[in-house]
Amino acid sequence: MLNQKTLLLLLVFLILQPVIDVLTTASLMIFNVNITVGVIVRVLYMAAILVLLLKLAFSSRLARKYVLYLIGLAVVIGINIAVNMNLKDPYFLFKELKFYNKVIYFPILFLGFNMLYLQMKKNRSPFMEKTTIYFLYSSLIISAVFIVSFLTGTSLSNYSHTKVGFSGWFFAGNEIGAIMAIILPITVVYAIEKTESIKTSYYWIPFVLLSVSMLFLGTKVGYGGIVIVLAAACISLLIIYLAKERTKKTRANMLMAIFLLAALALSTPFTPVFNNMYAHANALGIEVQKEKPQVEVQETPQEDGEEIIEEEQKVTEAQIQNLVFSSREKYLADFKQDFMDAPVLQKLFGTGFAGNYEMPLPGKEPKMIEMDFYDIFFSLGIVGFLYFIAPFVYYVIRFLVYFVARIKETFTIPYVMYGVGFILAAGIGATAGHVLTAPAVSIYVAAIMSMLMVHGHIVDED
Picture 1 (tube, rainbow, N blue to C red):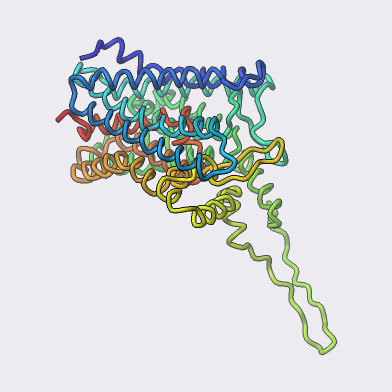
Picture 2 (picture 1 turned 30 degrees about the vertical axis):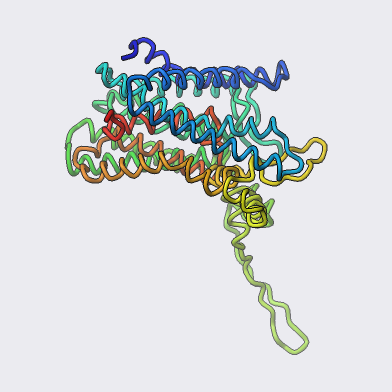
């Protein structure tokens, strides 16, 4: 059994994530270096988790299984590299390795956190409570960075053209947006557990601060994340109130969630994302007016006496997809075609980073789709993708069966809101990317999944 201080130190790393990201921004913008603080620190942390797994493998059968799985994943990626070195022209080995370093980060941390939480469980440590607090501290640091940078006028812009949005002192706007959406429901767990009445509703302040910061981003992910989390909180609290606990505490939290959802609805027209949706629609040629004008039907007489009545503008399916996916659907179509045209070996073991790219023009780089599940599928191929995703699907299905089978016990705020965090991670990864292939984000997803699996006895020693 590992020392409790060592286990907590590995978990405390969650708090440091926003600090590391700010230092990464400084590395890129001030010192202009390619190997940033974030890359170095996160690679070292991944190495520490691997050492933990290897050390536990001497005494734990489960840890040995995890190590064997990771060895198998290394073999799959090795085959991928060997295949593509012979089939792809050009082939940029450094870019391929850099991409796969991001891909393997999530499975290593997920399996490592499983063993980390199991050890804490053996030590009778309240690991769910500690995880909630560490996520809360991380959210407070992010909120402070956003608010201070905005007030001082030093915030980075999240967009370069007609859209409005700010990313604080965080260089990757998409990644920080995903992080904020994923940890937002955990701030709700803290708020609901601490709030006993309307008088103590100030425990919702961390949630409010993070929500305001998410609105600063001006992204659909940020706004949608707030809506989903508040809606989930309202519905779950209502169910608990009607079926379980008709207490003042539940009633106070339910009123707070409803109030905040109403406040969001009223403030929506003044948010950056509201302006950005109009800007995006207009860029696609969809004429949208914020105020409904008086409709006049113009009639133009023809020589034969017939009249032409101007038809209302029709929005095409392609325009709707572009509004939702922000051009990712175009890259997806290209990747699908490239995959269909690829040799059998590439279909089985993947086309690697960015597919079968051509020699890029000066100043341009090979580009991913930025939809994580598609990116991993095309990069690793049919065999590689199935191998990569197998343990996660296995554990998620087992947890869902456990949750539904014991719904009276499991339908609690911590389980529901941690579950919402996982669902948001999967949804953002599937539509906007920068989750499973971004170490800064995937560490939070790994912690959420592992905490649920260990707490729900899904992951346990044989």
